[in-house]
Image (tube, rainbow, N blue to C red; front, side, top):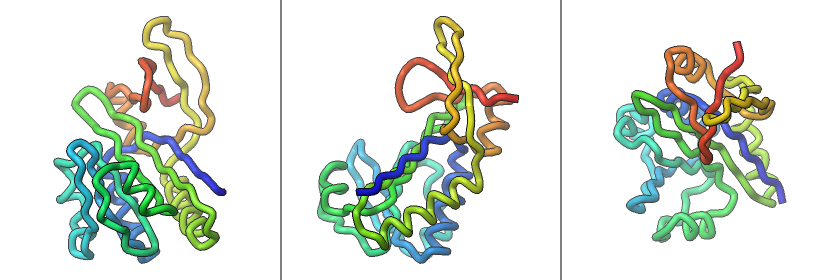
Length: 178
């Protein structure tokens, strides 16, 4: 079993451009997933081309990238993942006027072809991000280094502009070192 997880901060526009690029270049199927309320839709080619337009109101959604069309008969997140093993999941963090929330790319499979695709997608994400951030305890101010956490140029700019980079959980925040 191979699993991959890449936690990162990037603007929704950067993430959507990345998703569009890898989907078209690797000829993948792209499915939009919203979990509250649950919504699942395979995107057509013309929708993928206009991904930034379609998703501007859909911050905080996930995208499933797969080699084959997915089984869309699911009615929950867990059922979606059970019915569709081996897809790359990209969770797009929300961006508000005050904060940029963490995004995440994840994958689990035993299939060698799916693993190869996931490695290509992950490699492409790593090319547009850098590794190494500081985590700051919002109460005490104590800091620590997270070498594996990644960030994009857009996230670096938003951080410099004063937006807090918020992790998936906890009360800490992320700071990009100078």
